Length: 399
Image (cartoon, rainbow, N blue to C red; front, side, top):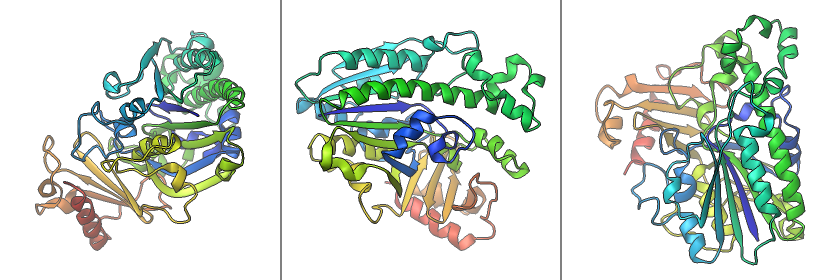
């Protein structure tokens, strides 16, 4: 058996067709999603410097834990004979990758830019390297191949201008935007997503061949999402203003998560074409990999296997919590997104800092879910009892 994990530093959920986008072309991701499990409520654990760490530790970033290298999922797989390889693209920011115990780590080098060949951008070089690896004779042992890419950057001009006509029809001509400012435009960002989709398609073609030889688990996700792009997509004044510096807005912590099992026959047929509404989080990736390779989750792992979550009638979670670089905490329930700014800029996260002084109501934001997609309307002053309940819940989760 083998598993292939494709992760990005950042990827906006609402820029992908299978997540509701109707004008950006992502045919390969959409085709994959049509026969896979799509998780609609996948949240980051952290959007700070530790973003992505929970993938390997299976623990929330605020939990007391061993060093990343001591008990991560890669080390556990290694001990049981699973071959592991990481291929990481230049410019990507995978936290602690040097200490994750992969049997082999290969860095690929690519460049972003309007004048760069589409075959030389970071995602292209990464996929080319992966296809070369997957073309090699299949090893006798179980294998994990992990591919990590940066956030899509400024794409080559052919992709950067892909949606200019659409924006002309919308009354937002890109001809009036200086070329040096294109990196800030949603039309150009849309082109970069289509470029990523193209290369995902190249990878999927190779995986389809490979899965004829042995069952293959494929997971595609990102450490975090993007919010400022969706503000433009919504095309409403309120949404355009919903781009604060606050890092815990929902579209920042929400990211895509697709899970596909190919070549598994009837045993895994139930995982085809599932739309899973349950709350899932970055901490669930490590237990999923252990489950796939038939290993038991250690007691210290806080996540749940996605293989179990996808088929579960009820979610194992009623809420998810997340944080940034020790400044803000967030709690998302089915009805609310509650954000708490800490009292001290560089203070440690403790119950006292979160809830222990009289200023806490001034440091809380509350947004109604699922209606307020962009976290525009702060209801904290109108719902003080809800705020108090959620902040107490958040404080109780702090060790």
